[in-house]
Amino acid sequence: MRDATGEVRLDGPARRVVALEWTYAENLLAVGVTPVGVAEKAGYATIGGAPRMPASVRDVGKRETPDLDVIRALKPDLIVTDRSRPLGRINALRLIAPVLVFDPQRPDMSAWEEMRTTFIELSRAVGRRAQAERVLTRLDQTIDRSRKALADVGWSHTPTVVAISYADRGLPVIRVFARTSLAGDLLARLGLQNPWRGRPEPDGLSTVQVADLRAVAMAEFLYVPVEGDDIVSGTLAATTEWRDLEFVEAKRVRALRPRTWFFGGPVSLQWAAEEIVRALT
Image (spheres, rainbow, N blue to C red):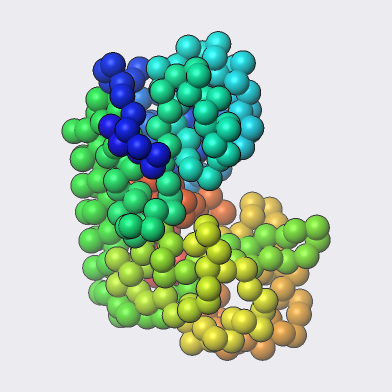
């Protein structure tokens, strides 16, 4: 097999897999493979629509700094991580088991293509290619159905922005998804237009000030709040600068459910597509 670092050889389909990112845990569960270990296991439960993770799965520590002793004790035959992790850490993992390293920010393909390619490659590693194809078919069908549902009520080509919002040390933070992100690609596939043109950071989002949002004043503003701490309807709504934005005055601000996740695989993106339709209709 080939990953972001080169060729990886497996003796056969992996059966004991450790996933160091939630996306790869989601992808494994989506094709019927339960990982033996997952980093930051509790956080996985916050992903909307993701397959349920059995209680038997072992937490192996932080995604950035997993516990190598715990991983070694699980006797994995495959470890899955992403390229953002330090090479020294990846090499230490290779002393335990073969490692597949994926790159969500590959320069040679779109975020959507990378999501699908990674999903298929991981399914090959565990001998579940046919199951993966069925999952992707369901995603495509959901997007087709969602695009038609939006078109039927006149939403086609509507300028639409998606953002995440949270508080950092008591201060509100707004980050807008660029067109090149998974969320941006999903909007386009749903027949919507993302008017945000700000320069994205490596994760596909732009951190903005309220004043920056005047550039997308004509848009529908969808946002993902933090569970129990919606700064848009709370802290920001109390400010004149926010209330003066055109999309706020026109009541075009719509909250997505807090578990909506635009960084995952086909299953969570299918859920996100349905959530966008729910919010707009």
